[in-house]
Length: 128
Image 1 (spheres, rainbow, N blue to C red):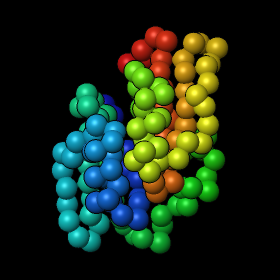
Image 2 (cartoon, one colour):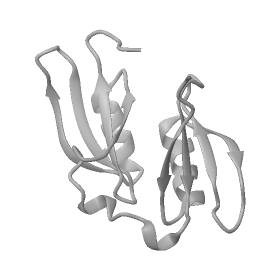
Image 3 (tube, rainbow, N blue to C red):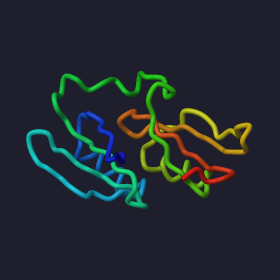
Image 4 (cartoon, one colour):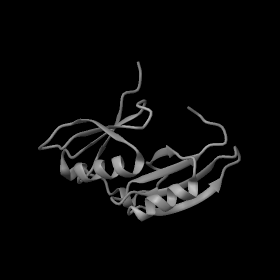
């Protein structure tokens, strides 16, 4: 087996997908219209894919109220301060960091404009 994708039920999949494409270097690899507005997005390597959809609308968690340690996605960055500044200018909110781990990694947490937690990682040694 190999990992294909993870899925997130969101209120506005087209808007979330557009933001992730513009600001997180994702690309839409498949889109299905109404009623779910399903969007499959791949990262810049093409190795990781996520699905954004709206089905059913009453099962969308309150992501903004969740502790980021409960659920978050992580993106590797080369310039932590630049990435934070770019995402904040695009409507993200910084939650914590940046801070260094015992392994020498630098981590920060932001929330996208819809409240989903995104960890930014600048690894001392790449993990993948």
